[in-house]
Image (cartoon, rainbow, N blue to C red; front, side, top):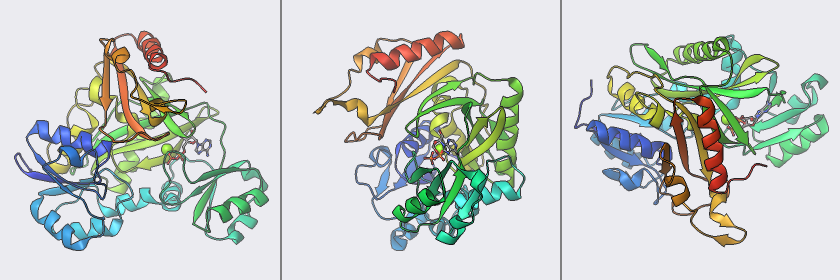
Length: 380
Ligand code: ADP
Ligand code: MG
C-alpha cells in the first residue's frame, strides 16, 4: 500500500487530472502532473507541473524518480511512455490495457475476439478494405482509429463512394467503419478495479449527446434493472479481461432493445462526474485507491442525480465573449457547480459541469433541465 504523504504522478493535466489532484490532496497525497500545456487545469493545483512533451525521456526519469506510482487521465499518452515509466515505478492502468482503448481497431477487435456485444464494423487500413465492404453496413460512420474524441475524426457515409472520399479527407489514417445504429438511448458504466481483481461499478447512467459531445447524464438510467445490471456485468468483464487497474468508463449503445459496447475509456469518464456529488466514493478517489493499492471505496449512489456539461459555447452571446451568469446556478441549493479553471472558452470545449441531486429522480431531472435553460443552454 502506498500511503500519504507519498507523491503520485499524473500524466495529463485536463479536468480529469484536476479532479484526481483534488481527491489525492484530500486524502493526504501530493501530486506531480506532467502535461505540455502551460495552463493545464491540473498543473495549476499540483505540487509540481512538468510542462513537457510525453516523450521527453530525460524529464520522465526525474518524474519517475519522485513518484511512488503513476496514472493517467489522457488516453492518448503514448503507450511507450507508460511502458518506460513502468520500469521504475508502478503504472496503473498498464500500457497494454491503455493501448487497446487508444486504437479503435484494437478496441473493436478486442470486443469481437472476447465475445462482448458490439455493432458490425470493419477495420480500414487502405482503400481496398473499403471497396469490399458489404452494402448492409451502410449507412455507416467512418472513424479514425487514433486520437478521435468528442465526435472529432468521424464522418457519416451512405455508400462505398462516400466512404472513399471521407477516407481521403482523413489522409489515409487507419479507420474503423461502423454501421450507424438506430439508437434507443445510450448508457455508460464507470467502474474501478483494484490489483486484487475486485471490481466496484458505479450505477449505470443514461447519456444524452449533442453533436457527438456528452450533454446530460441521468442517474439512475431510466431503463430496466436487467439492462442496467447487464451493462455493469459486461463492463466488469471487460476490465477483468484487460487486467485493468484503476477507474475506467465503458460506453454502450442500446439499439432495438439490445445492449452493445460502443467504446472504453482507460481513465475516469465525463459520464462519471455525477459520482462527485451523488456517491459515497467518487470516481477520482477510486482512481487514487486503485493506484495506491488501498481497498476500493463504496460505489453506492446516495442520491438521484443529473449532470449537465458546460461547453465553451456558453461564453458567447452572438459575437460577444462574456462569463456566463453563475449567480443563476448558485441560486439553486441542490446544484453543485464545478468549473475547471480553463483560461479560454472555445465552442465545444468542456469548461465545467453542474450536478443536481435529490431523492426524487423525476424532480431532479426537471430541476436540471430548468437550470440548464436558465444558464442559457438551448436545445438543438
Ligand atoms: P468519441 O470518442 O468522440 O466519444 P464515439 O464513438 O463515442 O466517439 O461517438 C460519439 C457519439 O456519436 C456516440 O456517443 C453516439 O451518440 C454517436 N455514435 C457514434 N457511433 C455511432 C454508431 N455506430 N451508430 C450510431 N451513433 C453513433
Ligand atoms: Mg464516446
